[in-house]
Length: 112
Image (cartoon, rainbow, N blue to C red; front, side, top):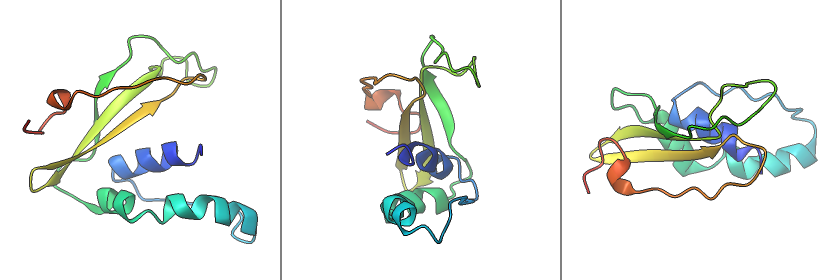
């Protein structure tokens, strides 16, 4: 679902979460509950090893969004979690499907 992308971005940059859906709408709550209750994602958000998430790789082509014309078509973010662990978010900002791949050697702070 589209809810996963902004929730993943929220997690990787350790931002406070503000939900803006109608809590009385059971259909919406049922749809987003698996996303907002994901324990692994919440753990990434709550982990603090002195660094919030940052982009480390991005497209040289923009996504072409009218509301954000300079946003790259895709970006990779990382966040150190401590204990040698690193979280990675690969996000497509564009209107069409992208096949994103990751070489673990490109992830800052990850020993391969």
